[in-house]
Length: 483
Image (cartoon, rainbow, N blue to C red; front, side):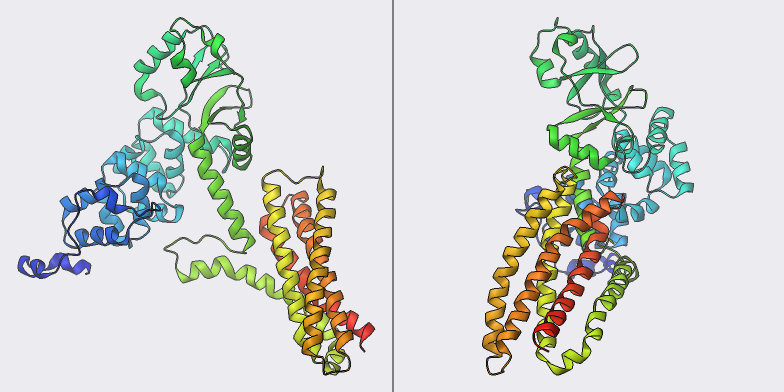
């Protein structure tokens, strides 16, 4: 069914079979067991849009959480996305925009009028609103900010003044703070009277001194159980302060290490300027994990709707770099081409040795990058980890050498040099897998020491190392033993 359906006559439209009758409980049928959108539900949304049935479309969208609507947008074409946006109220639109993938959000924002967008962003906390504003073109950003109330605009502009991927960008400026001399009763009364001035979600009351520096915090759960006359100073606990300039990856590490639900953010003078909550950190953890996975593979996330050119642009540079490193690696083959001509079996066995070394290096590299990200690997224990991985590589290498050597002897048993050929392959495997294990640890350690992201560049170096060593070890040992 296509968009042209909306132009058909009433009789022609009635003649088109419906996809399915919409069940009473739309929410239950919209999501599958893994909380992904059901394909049938997506078809119903498309069908309602094709028929121009605004009432049905609003009913279908109303059954979804804003995060699920954002997920739905990824399954729709640009025309359908534009129609869905038109049927969302400002509050839902704001939540959907904050949940959208960056690539999709940039496209959707172009179709939303500035006045509508400004009204929608007023419904968001400052951190989410700033995140959306940051994706706008400069001209439209100015229009949207100009249409917003002064307080909201100032909060967003302040947030945008901080560097990308810092605590200042991650934090929300709305925060519940109170002086030490307040009682529980005064604090509760303040929460009830402040209303919209407070963050939509908060877990702690931050107790501040006269210079607005945090001196402690009181969890809401503890506050509500205390008598009204209790002083906040008697309830407060130490808090972990987050500098406004801290990298978001470090923030996520602190939240994970100390099991935080929220934390105050302070400026260079130590004054309270905002808070970070666990829902923001979950997004950071997922984002950083996706970046590391894609970086290890030598690619980037071009998005579900990315065109061929965008995908090629994200992957081709790494493939070209890999082409250069592979050309250097196979130079070992060119150097020993006369030996290969004398014993063709070497050409058959070299790729096996190289491939096994590459796989071993990838295993070690993945473990090393994860350990660096989790702060489990540093100069304090680097040599112990290197020795451990070298030992593991030696054990694996010897085991594989015995298996591969036996297989080589059986396969070439009719040839006079079968036993020596098996020894060549076995020794080369041990050398390459030990090299892969050591390289898989040293490469990311060295890159981090140089201030580079180990997830981005390590795989290229490790692949080059194992390929070169695989070829070189086989041919060098063969030249010494066989030829």
